[in-house]
Amino acid sequence: MPTILGANSVSGYEVANSGNFGSDGMFLTRSQSDSESDTDRRKFTISGWYKQTFQGSASGWNGFWSAMADSNNFTSLKKNNNTLGNSRLIFDLKISGTNISFTTTQEFRDPTSWFNIVCAFDSTDGTAADRFKLYVNGERAAGAFSGDITQNASAHWGDDASAGRVGAYGNNTGGSYMHNGYMADVAMTVGYAHGPDKFGETDSNGFWIPKNPAISYSANGFKLEFKQTGASADASGFGADTSGNTNHFTIDNDDGDIAYGGGKTDTPTNNFNVLNPFAINRDKPITGVSQGGLVPFDTQNDAHRIIGSIMAFAKGKWYMECKYSGGTNEVTFGVLDADNRFASQYAYTAGGSFPGYIADGNSFGYRQDGNLFTNGNTTSGKTTWASNGDFLGLAIDCDNNAIYAHVNGTYVDSGDPTSGASKTGSLSNFTQTGFMMPAVSVKATSYNGAYVNFGSPANDDSGVTNSNADANGHGKFQYAVPSGYFALCSKNLAEYG
Image 1 (cartoon, rainbow, N blue to C red):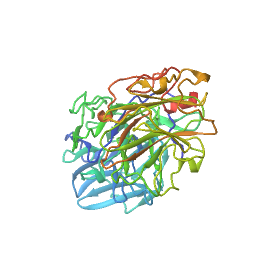
Image 2: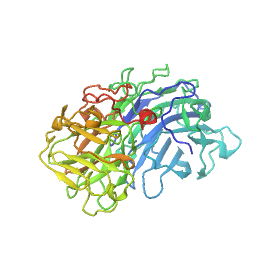
Image 3: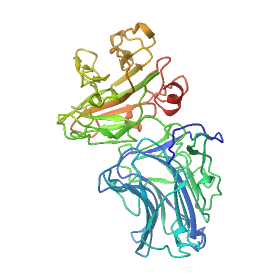
Image 4: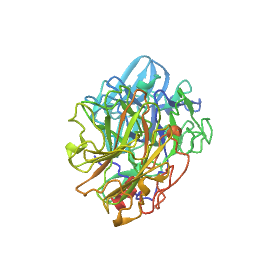
């Protein structure tokens, strides 16, 4: 199945923003009007673009959306979060306590890509198997129904007795049922059963990419672009409806931990690097990641627990940042030799591992206490970044094989990332042998160990209050991007990586 790489749209359509659903229990909700009849509700279409960055526990569910009256009456889409088994999409239509489900054959575990999921419901169809159709990246998904959807049954989108919810499953609340990741261009209309061509198109390379939804919005219809960051249900809110209907959504069950973030630039047309929940040490796995795959956390404090990221590079110049969250956390930020399994050390070290730990390959790490780790060697006495809110910036020059670092804007050892072949103040002069992958390790007792930023930062507690972009206009960093260096995103990788 073609995945989303973030290329330009055939029609020129760019998705500028996404929403980061980043903390347990948070979702969007709206009371629907009575403007649509039972007959209208025999059809609906809802499309969204999703990037799931945290797979959750084996018992948890990832909720995409629901329209629900109560526990016995709802229409919903979810995914099982069991990373070692069933990770299938599941559609539920529950009426008066009787549930009919559709479960995909394919499993969906990929944390690296954006997916377009289109659900088209038409209970008037004479063929029972065609009363609900689910499309992923333009292709109809195979699967199995638990029974036949009753012909002419009315679903719950457009029902004034049912709340419309985005980022939640069924009528549930709590972190085990909510979305954790990104959403973009979520569009819904009642009275129509559209195919995927209304929401996407295939580019010249065969990839499914977004286009501006070509649909008419019903009275309860909406389009969520997540352009804004406000908490109110209005045009400046996170749940603002941009369809023209002003069907704005309210933020529900925010736990006060900055559980959401609008205006993110990680989108289906420009995919940004995030941490990869599968690139971990299996003997000492990290507790998890939150806020769109940008906040690694550990609660066990017994070993350095490493996690890699979804993108790697073998050439070019790249810039990234990491904020220290304070406490007794130990954080090491750096890069791994992605081509060398011993250097990456995801699965082989029972005592834990961190960037720079292993002698083989090109691996580099900078710990908050001022220790540097380069291919198994330790250098102490460098500038610390051990206070809550301190930033470490890394500038990695693969064209000249050098790594530079700054702490809160001041480069260590008077480093000059623009010095080219002279490598002035470089902390690591490596020999390029393959792809290098950003990585971070944490050893902590509290949940948030660090906040990494590859150009599309986590939510407000990421500490990024400035808007420094690279020369291509990509990225949002706390400190200036050195000349010639770029944020790690699909558009920049296509040009420089």
